[in-house]
Image 1: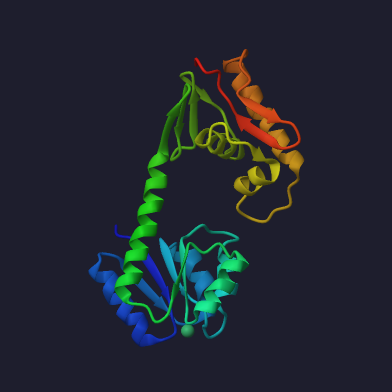
Image 2: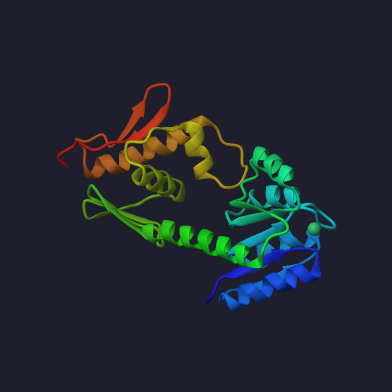
Length: 229
Ligand code: CA
């Protein structure tokens, strides 16, 4: 099925023009004009991308973006009528994927939508990652190590997958934490240590002699393999 784009825009003419262009480009779209309706709709319909206007009746785009990011990684393109406003938005680090200044051409918006979705698709083709004896199946949340299936919790899976994707990169506990839990639950650095400890134990059952997850003193953790493996 084609990607579903949510257009959050309170100027009906502009909203419908965007919808037309998106349809022509092969997307499905839905229009919401009231800022208060966005969160519920996103939760129910799970769109693939949001075009989010800044000034809206009910609730502004900044507020909506902040709340969305607490439970969703859906790509967001924010639109604002003022260039200065976009600088301010960037400074707020709202987690939007792109910003566009009004008046824009619908063609430009469609191009940006396509670019973001393409990037996302590329990132997701990493569904089957294979390296150093690991085989990661992201869809099934499964990891095989040296032909043996690891019995991982979701948190352990996410940790290992992240470390594998960026072999050698040192992650701080705080970075690992934000990757572990999308919601704002209270967790401590020790949570990460516990997950790492369990993960190491499971890896050691298969390869006792190698320390794959290494501690970097005072910083965090990284993944490392002997060069000849
Ligand atoms: Ca508006």
